[in-house]
Image (cartoon, rainbow, N blue to C red; front, side, top):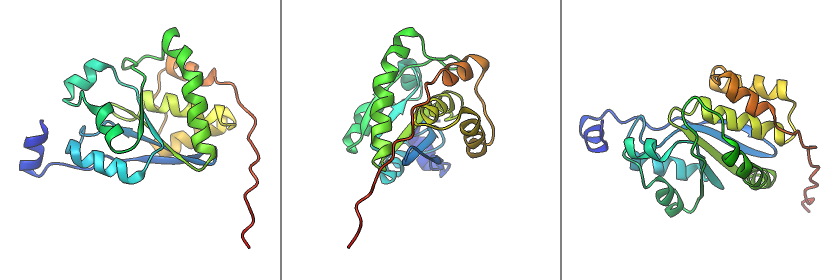
Length: 185
C-alpha cells in the first residue's frame, strides 16, 4: 500500500521502537519507516527519538520495493548519521560486510558510551535487527546469555536463524568501561 493511500484511508500506524539499554546508551530495533504507516510520519517519529545514527540492514532492492530508496538521505536530512549494511533477509553478513562491522561497532559503542542512541532497522525489525543488536550488546560487554535473554524479552522472542545467531555470538566481549561522571556542585 503506497503512502498516499495509507494517508487517505487512515490506515497509517506509527513505527514501533523496541528499546533497550546497552553500553550506557540506548539501542532501538524497528522496522523500516513506512512499513506499517506513513513514511514521512515515521521519519518524524524516528527523528524525535534522536538517534546518533541509524543502521539499516536491508538490500537496495528492498528499499526500492518499499518505495523508500531515499531513506539514507532522508535520515541524514534529520541530522542523523546513516549506515547502510545490505544484508539479505534470512542471512548473516558476508565476509565483505563482516569486515566493515568492527568500524561501525566501534562508532556505535562510542555513541552508546556517551549516553547516545543507536537505531537498527530492517524490514520487520526482528531477525536482522536482532542479530546486529545481539552482537553489539555482547561487544559492549554484556554476557551472551544475558544479552539473548534481554533481547528476547524486548522483542517477544529471538527470531534469528542459526546462521544469524552464530554470527552474533562470534562477537568478542569487550570489558565494560568505567566512566566517572563529574560531580555536581
